[in-house]
Image (cartoon, rainbow, N blue to C red; front, side):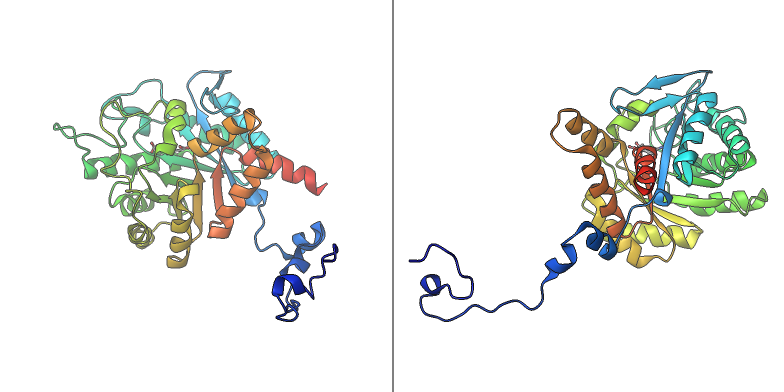
Length: 347
Ligand code: PBG
């Protein structure tokens, strides 16, 4: 038997059956070189797709590490402006703000206060960087002493409709400070319509609503709850956030929120829900955003720190998978670092 392998006459293998067909269609042609792959890429991550979350705390000159999210910090308003400046310089179009108030109580009193951390940060960032879009996450959980997303009834259940009224007041308060987009993340029923009506009544008809329409009750929010101090004191969020086995229900939630006036629909978390992103994308004609959440961030960081994965390649792969699924906006704790890297690669 000859030692050189001849693919067209594998006599010994084919046992006299003749020659093998030679492919005329060869998809590998388009993968031959880096330039060819670049030319034929169906999706591409760009800085314009990205939104960086910023956690705002009381005080001045505060820059505090979050142990479970290496590289992410809590900032006082003055430092948050510098962080926002770095984001703008990296080329990303927007930041999303989360606030940790000086005090929490049952009524979430700080949510609507003009001197609240988010309100002050909106004013400071918009006056320093008018071009940068400022999005404000809108939820009760960072403001309530019990850590739930809304106000509770005497029996300890969340009162949907009173919670919606609280959010509508919060939205108007953010709008008065110059926010560009409010992002309700609480999953109460009917809140998009109520927020839209309240904003319009207060003559803030140009403020957009990015609804966390499809937010699952997920284990991947773990590190965020340390960052925002918003772990529920009892119970969990399963009575309002979606149940992970459900996908058709996601389309129902998305369509409802579009009908109520949502300008952008958000799916969260990202990685375990890309099928949901794809079906929501097909169902609605507004931009679809995805939130690459804290647990998804921390898993990458932890594995990279041990040398188990290549962080840059893993992040690029994860985020382009969000675009491939149909998201055109990606909220991620990697936003600033990726945007900075993309800008360097173009030079
Ligand atoms: C609620 C809110 C949460 C996140 C964003 N908005 C936490 C929750 O629902 O428990 C999670 C973000 C993340 O994990 O990165 N205000």
